[in-house]
Length: 269
Ligand code: ADP
Image 1 (cartoon, rainbow, N blue to C red):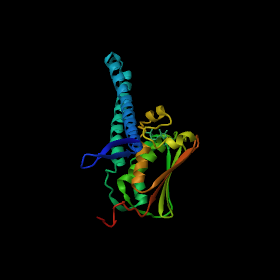
Image 2 (tube, protein in one colour):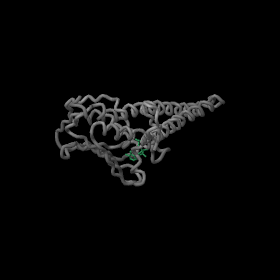
Image 3 (cartoon, rainbow, N blue to C red):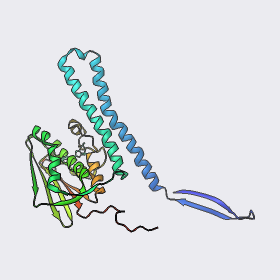
Image 4 (cartoon, rainbow, N blue to C red):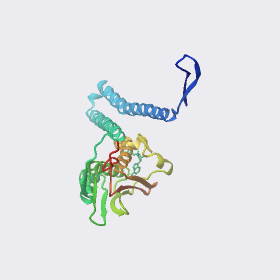
């Protein structure tokens, strides 16, 4: 609590009392704390790939250049780490835009099967590389009024994770069905699963169950934080069910009737 007080003096210059102003600054402090923690996290996360790029470059300059195989190996790591750095910077900017609701939604009617198809088409190569089977289950033709790019980003992040955290030869299922006035989209995998104690934290920025595994798969720890905010921007919610060693299912529910808070609202002055 922040307390300000000042004597109250009337026009004759007589002291008549004290004006006390109480500010509840708990919320401000909390936001400040969150912001400084975020900056600390970002700096730490950005430093990790930079340290690795620097280290491998120095070793090359110190003489490892002579050995062609070592050289190729190191350059590959440097390339991958710079890609990750690039992805991280983009995702940090995306996340801050989404969080501050600085994205404009373009709401149009889309066929859900087509939307899912669009996302799968960019993931074909990764699916093939890990020999994962992908099944799409849609009971009927469904049309949804939504933002195509947001929908794509949500599904892309969820299916990319399913690919990253499912061992070779496993299976992934994408399902879409009506549930009351919502559309339920499920992404299920037969992967490594998430320990129960970690489930409440996986939507936090930079939270990863296993940092090394996430890094090996090119992860940034921001994918699910972005998904959660996008889903909320679309007026929906997301849930997860998982068992270690068995698999994980993410369920996204999006309303069929989506109204932006200000859309169609009567204007009051
Ligand atoms: P990352 O870039 O590390 O994948 P995300 O924010 O997308 O970051 O996910 C956070 C963490 O949640 C991951 O590091 C991983 O531990 C866990 N996770 C996400 N999706 C899955 C999944 N389908 N199966 C198992 N673990 C998952």
